[in-house]
Image (cartoon, rainbow, N blue to C red; front, side):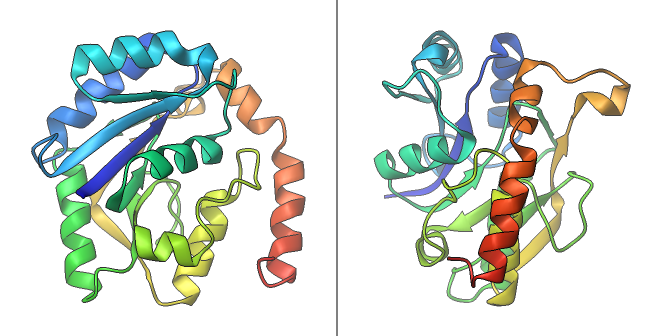
Length: 217
């Protein structure tokens, strides 16, 4: 079984995805295809992106028959097909710092003696109690019901962070940096992918509040 599988759900942004994956592999601090694997996953609409980038960089690609997958569904499909001890969820708008993955694995090992936990990547602008992207053990993920496919896009990370923290299984690594390069940082408008992700924000927010009030059911 692979130690770590890093999953990148794909939606458009061909050149950006290519550059992101190239940087991720180069800076992980662990040998790719030995200590870890990266999987690009998406629907048939993104087959060209997944096929081209996976071949050029030498990572894995998974294309599902549906035209388009949500972020959380894409993570779940890749998890089903690629067994691992740990999973990391990332995106193509991240700028990695050297040893972003190896330092997260180290943080997991020194924080949780049994290896069961969640380590948040830094660089997203959130507090120490929340991470948009993270490394999580399969054991903990399973105990939380798997990836939160009930959300369209938003609040899945919020739910997982809160629940893991309540269990004493969450930490954030200051040196595992994936800078979240949103367009508003450089005063640019959202592209189509960002707009799609935000389109059901209020629906996801209402579902999050309902689940939290109902004991995450």
